[in-house]
Length: 150
Image (cartoon, rainbow, N blue to C red; front, top):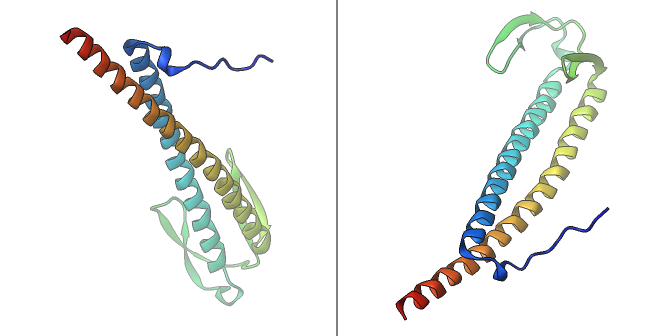
């Protein structure tokens, strides 16, 4: 496998620096969007944990509101407070005990947390790269402006 080639940004001209800046901006936008989506997914899994915690044995036989979507709830009776149905992805649902469901969702939250940390580090490095690139670009533009005056 070949090593990535390193280029000194000081050796690039203004047009090339502008292209690299555009590429970095696009990457940052994509990474920031991905970060936001991961945060939303993590919030949904945390909400699932809260929902599973609400299914208690003392609520057996009571009428509860069952979420069909984020905004649609229907009344239903809680028949088996020891088990819940868990969406495991791509349209598959599995019957699990409350403890298994809590473990499942907690693992998902932790997995996303680790990915968020990694992504946050990557975003930070890209921003540092962007700042140094902008500094080089500004100094090159100033140099060009001064050479045109003379």
